[in-house]
Structure formats: C-alpha cells, structure tokens
Image (cartoon, rainbow, N blue to C red; front, side):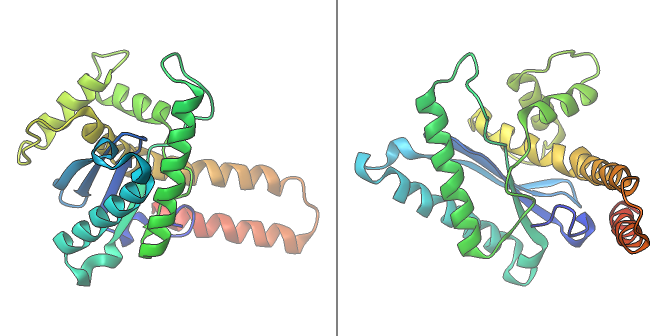
Length: 224
C-alpha cells in the first residue's frame, strides 16, 4: 500500500478503475508527462451468465498486463492502481442489489491486484465526493459539475488521446486518478500529520512523543 508509505514521485503511471458489476471503466495515465496511454471498459454483460465474476477477474488481469506491456516490463515498478471508493449506503438511484454487485467487483479487483503484485494506493479508493470537489475547483464557473462536465474537461485536456465513443465510465476512472495525484495524496498526508499532532498532545511519555514526532518528520518528507 502506498498511502503514508511511499512518495508519489517514486511512481510515474497510475491505472485507475471506476468499478461496477456491469460496465467498469479504466484508464492508464502517465501523470509525469500528463498523457493518457490506454483506456477502455470491462463489460460483464458479454460474459456467460454463470461465469460473470470469472470473466471479470480475467478481464481486470488482462488490463493490468496490457498496462505493464505498454509502459514496459522494466518500468512496472513505476505503476500503481487506484479505484473509486465503494459507496457505504444506497443513493437515490441505487439498490441493495447494486451495492452487492459493487462489493463483489471491488473484492475481486483487490484479489487480482494482489495476485498481480501491483501496488495499490490504498484498499478503500477515492470517494466520488472528493472527485466532485476537486473538479469543482478546476471548473471554476461550474458549482455542481456533472459526469458530462468532467468528461468534457478531460477530453479537452488530453486532446492527444482518442476517446472516441468511450463511455463516461472511462472519464470517471481518469477523474479518480487526477483527483488522487493532484489533490488527495497531499491532503491525506496533511490530514494524517494533523491527526498525529493531536494524538501527540495526549501522551506524557517522552519515548512515545519522540516516536510520533519521527512519524511526522517521515510524512513531511512525502510532500517536500
């Protein structure tokens, strides 16, 4: 896991997923050169009804292997994964069945990533609220950016990549990656430092205080 453990500068590529039971979007982004290298969808509606999750596992594995091939085997260590966070409750347009399908997709995704030996940012993913908040700051004149607004921004930013008829699931996946690299990574570090400083005040032990202060110094190096 990268969160609180590794510097973002240790990496160059991020393979991001917007997971779903039926259509999951993905995108491979070279964030140091700001280039989209690959994008597409995994559509489980193409799978035999009794083998949906076996199909999903195999397709995620194929996407990871394809990403590794694109960047080159010698650069595989520069790649990490992320995903949109699994919702914790029903939304106005979701059902229990939808959440169950999402939970299955997330579990299988984590298993594929683990078996492939690819680093993940964390095991939770990036909340859609964080994505919308960040893109609200990018799209200054838009108070409530929708999926279509985010897709428009992404297609204008990455004009060198042909998105063609790729769905919003793809641009959603890329939006997750952009939010993590450009905003959330630093924010997570700052929030963790703040939490440790608060914890520091509760201890009298010099040894414990020194331990926590070392943790703070370690984290501060990640955003230096």
